[in-house]
Image (cartoon, rainbow, N blue to C red; front, side):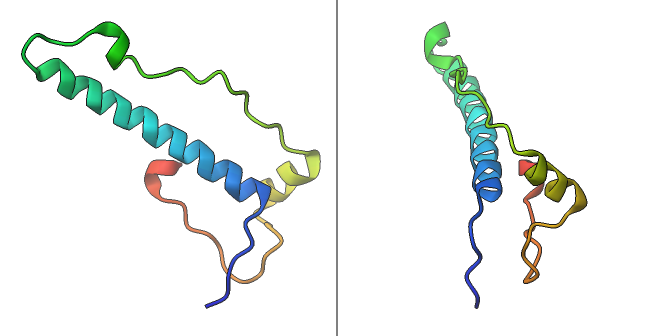
Length: 84
């Protein structure tokens, strides 16, 4: 099985997806903590707001992404529906 090259675009998309999953998990944890006796504290259940700014892609990278050409002819990468 050929190894795919991890481009900056793929890594950035993966990070965004994982951050979204983390926010979803943090929300679920907060809901579960609220079910415990004594309720929950506001600071412990509030998801952490990211102060990190998103990287801006170059014009060439945006045009490649828009056209669907990632530079690889091997196979398209399937993105899990939750990561879209």
